[in-house]
Image (cartoon, rainbow, N blue to C red; front, side, top):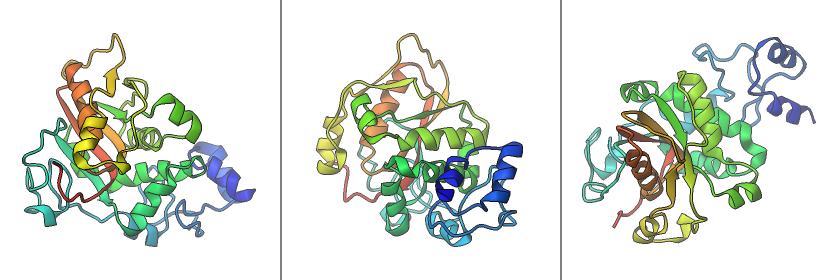
Length: 263
């Protein structure tokens, strides 16, 4: 019960938060270890509820991947604008900012975030993204943050949508507006994980639209998802945003999986 109260209150601020810290000392949102009441010395203003071990395991200090698709340096030259995985693929987003690779501890976290009981973990990963990738995110000069939407029936069944929570947390940390209703999922697509790379692009074709009456003339947008593999979902969503007038779209994800290829 104490743990549930602590996790429910993890996003609160002010005197109420301070009082709860006295009653229930903060715990790591990932491994549930006790945290120092004052946080680590390098703790940013928006407190990240992760112990030092989890911070180190869940996100490298820097990311040396492809600027376009976010693949690790092994797929191409470190910091390259395009790599062997995306040079022949028509991705509609302009860059990718991942926290880390979809392996080991970060893979487990992404899977846990898909359950409503782990909403605090999603919020925490948004804060860690803002902290660890502050320079890359600032370089994009974004004006709006938009999460990848989930089809309403699937959202109802699951009880949560981690991109929504990551987006809200990231927006608060960066001081950028978040629009959770701008992008609409038009149909309930098949699960991407069960499809080949080519099928993934076909599966989400035309799956997104921008809500009627919304104009995005010249806006630079951060598009939020929990994981990027082939880039099909983010590419299709970015296409809808650009058709509505967005000038540029960057995919921001907790984890970047390493596909064999994208064709």
